[in-house]
Length: 226
Ligand code: FES
Ligand code: FES
Image 1 (cartoon, rainbow, N blue to C red):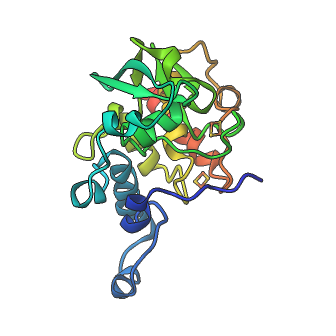
Image 2: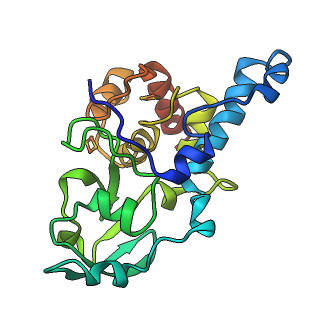
């Protein structure tokens, strides 16, 4: 089973992605329902994927150009991500996943296996879902790239994000951004109407917490609304 790699400093310090609950909040838990608690936790978790990293303000990452100056053979690339152009100088071997997370400071896209086997790194490129760990960033100059940060905001969730919260479609949340990106893409794909069809359509997205039945319920809910 693939281990999760260390998260960025901002994600570790936020505590929200791990579902950490402080001792001070525990008396409260006895007075709320599991659904109510998970809904708040889920909103926080999904919001964490779309909010600016907490430490970005305190200690900003060095400008990409400065960083690239020390990289021998750096290549110029323009990536169009979530509606914005980013002019970068990067090592041509940089994967799209690493570029999004490390160069563009978009940690919502997760690194699970880094080998194309878990789907945690799913993003949309020109409207189709791909595993960003298998793509080189330089190969996507000019393409339209959408990440989890680009499909909804904490105060304006995509219907699929809201459905995942409503249907408890996650536990630890690590796979969730990839699941949601696949589920959103699936809405436009020729997938049959049954739960089994959705399971097949989401086959490349692994959830080691085993939240599959609730994920399917969330996807089917949104499909019915559509
Ligand atoms: S990180 Fe697992 S498929 Fe990309
Ligand atoms: S919710 Fe934990 S891996 Fe899917």
